[in-house]
Length: 134
Length: 134
Length: 134
Length: 134
Image (cartoon, rainbow over all chains, first blue to last red; front, side):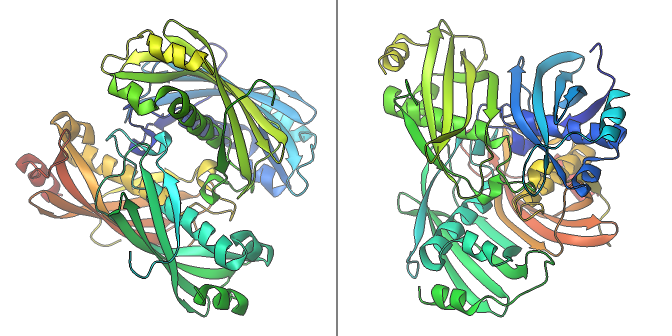
């Protein structure tokens, strides 16, 4: 996992499995989000701090490659990093490992918006600085 | 289904199944909610009308009996009725049928609250009238 | 929606919203799946028919662009088409419309596998024929 | 939390919130399940051990009282204990705390079944012994 310096642990919940006996593909986006929230907590004072400023981070685009199925009770390590912060836009990249094997990877693109109007708002400088310093 | 005069149709999604090959128990509350929303739309102008008044209906208590498992792609009929409207409180009862067999039943208890303060607020008279007339 | 000949209707559930007041990004993959299941029912005898043959369709890759937020109770039209069936692989493309405006689009890549071994298995000829005829 | 000797930690995910700005009522059953799985891991070798014996634990009935809303990023402590093991039936009781305040409680009733036939099967003696010793 070169270039990743942050990760968070997730354990596959029974409710996240489906009748194929594996984790449903939609849960990976929830795990990515868990990692983003943990990343923002570590480096930027938490997502709630951003929300308290009247900002929301919308999801503009998501992409996942499912390399190996995840199964009930699997202990996963979700690596995440924030890249490409420009204006109101930023991206996160992810890799999910299970016992040192990458079982999925992906990325999400985001825009910072005003939480009332949902209009794009530049990522605050302190947040850029905090995330760029990682 | 005596005493039920309203129902809505739900089809079990693949994402709602789990590794037991059946619908996960948490989804029944989502289906109950789908029925409440449809019921409020039919009889009271829609849940959004209530939200537009600055009210939310919180869930205070839920109960379900799972009689037979629901499976992927099952076509379910969710019967719902509103009962016991008093002050800021009301309850809904439900029965879920598949091919005329009741496979689950339950109830939910609710309070109407101010959406900003989350303090209890009496159910508006027009809403009581609308729901009582059913 | 040129080139799409199939669509299915989805209504945004309250449970699918998040604290941003919009539908959570993970739900789009559930709606895509609802459309795939409906598409397979229309053109190929249903997903269960495929499962009854001892096959599963795994999700290998997903991509979504979120153009406009979806909100509670929105009536969405999910357009879907199956493309690029080759060997054990196939893809679906999607566009989600609300009142004739495309609010999201995306695609999913799949592999047909044996449901016991999860090893790739060619898409059955009858299924290729059924899906190609659309 | 008298009489509870086991608990597990859960943090409210953003995906678990809804447009009321609080955790959706259906998630409590997922958190209960997370606590059951952790409880079985601690005292009975894990739920997977039970599944490996060809058994599943079905949910027969669920009940929750929501005392205070849970919010995004709340750190919750889910207390759980197994009670009333008889034949193929057993029950779990739960209390969810946030900063030493109980914000929800509830119970679930279960039956042990054969995973192929879904017919009731007595809870294995070793499992009764393991859970009763708590």
